[in-house]
Image (cartoon, rainbow, N blue to C red; front, side, top):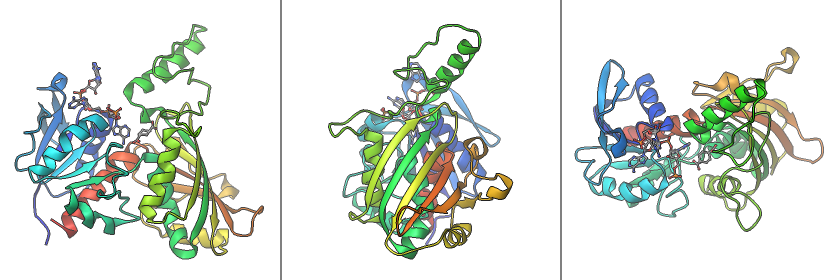
Length: 340
Ligand code: 25A
Ligand code: L14
């Protein structure tokens, strides 16, 4: 059974990810009924464009969800903890972009290309969690390899865009570049150090084990989504002076041998993947080419010659789209089609 029209609320509609959610809903064939836009008191009355309509923003409260079928949350973890249970209580299914519920054993953590079946678990709490952006794109690329030959261990280094931090970080990068060109002093407020012409091996907070929280999200979320605690994952997450698009160098040790050619053939037909791998013509995925696109781009596929069963690749995706808004809308689409 599938509902013909679905009433959707977007909590955090004025933010970077919320805005992208509206864009994705408009670009896809989504069976939308009412669209309710929610944000903080600061934005009440502001009008946002959706297709040819202008919709006024309302304040997010516990009473915002009457008659809502699906609530897309992207207003930060503390707002999710405060209001997602009220939305679920009111009968909406919440798809939450924050880190608030990702590791809760009663809440499914979903990448539709990888574990769509986990969506069925939404009935437990009325909430489905959207994974971390870096984890999503890595797993879209790894899923066909995992299914074919199994995965023992993943070693990943990320090159993450400043848009992941938000609009203020984009402004900080731009103003530092301008200041540098003008020979002026660079001001750092969002990041602890200069981000222009620099790389910061520091995303989210440092933990007692010496890793950052972002690095441990990649470890823990990968295991939860593959439902496989046996996979070894080790990550180094790095902020780079790119505006949109996270890039990742992934090294994977498989259980059984697979050739680079076989991986290319698998990924050519994999859902959500665009294979961009033609070294002869200098073609490979790049952040500047993925911005605004839905695809997860994979290239530089080659065998790791230092071990028996190893593959290296480079994967790039728009962190605001596949890393957040698009993945959330895709979850909602499966939910509507198969469960509502
Ligand atoms: O640390 P946290 O709490 O977990 O939050 C993390 C942040 O991550 C973003 C999201 O920022 C969140 O704030 N985020 C969420 N998921 C993400 C993902 N997967 C992600 N980032 C990357 N990947 P955001 O900018 O995308 O969205 C913020 C939205 O949340 C609304 N909001 C904030 N507090 C709220 C609230 N909604 C309801 N109740 C609250 N108490 C926020 O709406 C926005 O939609 P807004 O109305 O507060 O903001 C409108 C515009 O106002 C500007 N602004 C922001 N902060 C301030 C401000 N202006 C003045 N003073 C401020 N302190 C911004 O320009 C904003 O767009
Ligand atoms: O856990 O690139 O969803 O700053 C989203 C933004 C993690 C960090 C999350 C970034 C955050 C990410």
